[in-house]
Structure formats: C-alpha cells, structure tokens
Image (cartoon, rainbow, N blue to C red; front, side, top):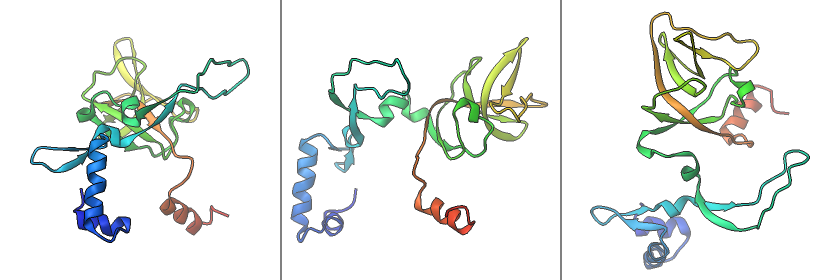
Length: 189
C-alpha cells in the first residue's frame, strides 16, 4: 500500500489525515485488512464485483427465472480454486479457436494438476510450450488442436503438462498499447 501522503496526493486530498480516515473506513467495511507486521493489504472483498443471478439469453428458448438479486463475487472466486497454484498466461495463436480460445485471451491455468483425457492444458512438448486438449489414444497421450488447419501433436521425446486450463478471460476492448500497434500496422482504420 502507498503511504498516507502518497494516497492523499493521488486522491487529491489536501491532508494526509483524510487518506488515513479513508483507510480506516475501508478497514471497517472489510476492504482492507492488516497483515503480519501491521501493514494494510487489500482483503478478498477489495476485488469483488456484483454478480447477478440473472442470465443473458444467447438464443431462442432460453427462458430463465431470475430474481434480479446481486451478490458480491470476486472474479478470482469464480475461476481459481487454488491461488498458490494458479497462473495467468496470455494466449497467442489460433490453434484453439474451435474450442473458443482466441489469440489475446488470458488462460487461467492451475499448475501441478493431473490432466485427464479431454482437459485443455498448457504443456511443454519436445521443448515447445503450447495450449491444446490433452487426449489419450490406446494408452498413448497426445495434444489435439481445435482448428481445422492444425494437426495433433505427439511427443517425440518429452511431454510435460504444466497445468490444466480452468477458464479463459477475454477483453473485447483492446488495450491502448494494442490499439497503437494496430494503428501503426495500418490495421486500425
């Protein structure tokens, strides 16, 4: 956490006492907590967003019985069961487009998991890192792409499963740096 002076400056407060009072209110409401050594750190509630039990229709015949209730839910609680074993990896390439994983997506990967047939995994195969579906045929493991132009990958020497993909996060708005790259390449008009 920044110092009270830094917080006051960043928030436009005239006195650092105002930043102190704000942090006290955040502690009282459960958004900040004291860690070992007395330092303030964000609590799990700090990152929560409203999660509705309403559903959005994506086709005909999808009737729901939503109540409109909202509950606080942190995105990590939806995707992460073991935080100490979870990493986020950005996907590059299009070999998994037919599985709904696109270039630019962020894969939520739980490491140290035993992969089973049908899991989407991040793996190292013969020195190359990739994201594919883990399959077993006649006792022999291989990695299957989900793009009609790609072939499955069988290990010639080594196949190491780094982790199992638990979810994918996608932004529909490119970052400003991404927009600058596209504009520079002439792709953004």
